[in-house]
Image 1 (cartoon, rainbow, N blue to C red):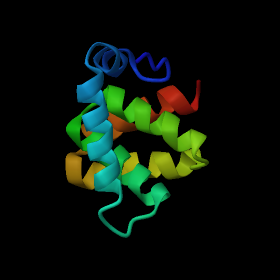
Image 2 (cartoon, rainbow, N blue to C red):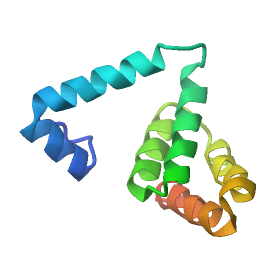
Image 3 (cartoon, rainbow, N blue to C red):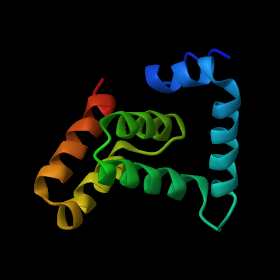
Length: 105
């Protein structure tokens, strides 16, 4: 299983451990279906979780997907601004920088 749209680390897991990747994808789908949030809201929440975890790669991934799904750049950037009072200015600014890495490319 080779998915060139995946980041290199995830793509490697998908290719080398397809059963693990399939289980991971199924878990993600079941979690998405577990409540009332719409796709846009879920994407923004996942972006916020990635920012909170300090994961540059995950932020990049969720921004790419968000843009493909039609989420406007200002909504993505607002996620980083909302992080400032909770995570602190450095984490919020880092997240904004990671978002802009993709938005401005």
